[in-house]
Image 1 (cartoon, rainbow, N blue to C red):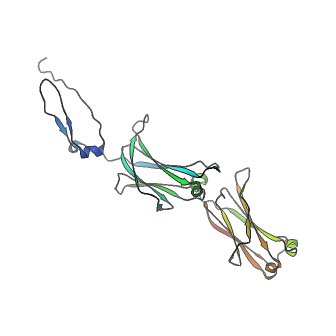
Image 2 (cartoon, rainbow, N blue to C red; image 1 turned 180 degrees about the vertical axis):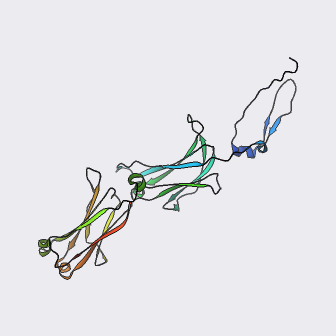
Image 3 (cartoon, rainbow, N blue to C red; image 1 turned 90 degrees about the vertical axis):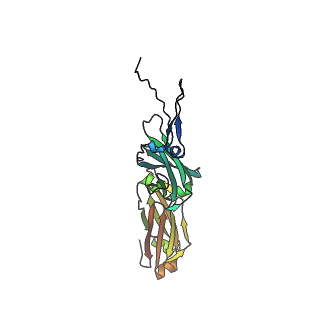
Length: 264
């Protein structure tokens, strides 16, 4: 029909990085040779990248006695595609070189884009409460930084819980029999990495004997350490201090003075 306009379309999807590196030509083959249409990035209407949400996927809180290493996964999500730089920190210190990742469309999830960055760490480090940070820069090289922190203390216990701590005095008879022992007891939800040390008159002592951590039916853990008391220490008066430190709580000390007037 005279004057009728016919048209067809063709679509090519390219990445933002390749659009800045290459020019693209569209050729139309018909009865007559038509000049190609040339596309460069100056024809593109660039939209600002959407914010990226960063989350660290962590190991479970159950016991894994036979495991040596565990894995952390930094999970990135956004409503726009593109590249990002991922950097891992341990207790605020850079662990390794930055890793570049690409946020890709999530199949079956609408318009979302995501990516992952994995990190293997020792179970010992995780159990003692080391803090790990996933630092994301998007786009790479910019000042647009998003960070997320994770530690076993935060994930499994919610906060830095101070332990319950007390010292049990020896009996009067045991003092006379030269078999007196002080008992330092620490109770907390997480004592796997806790350490008990003793001070005698403000000087470190190696005479303490610490038992294995025990767990009751409610999941609460108990750690005990014993320290001998000599008749001479009792006679002159001696200050004994029990100090505990662990990954999920600040250092705490309980002290008691043992002297001849002390009786139960």
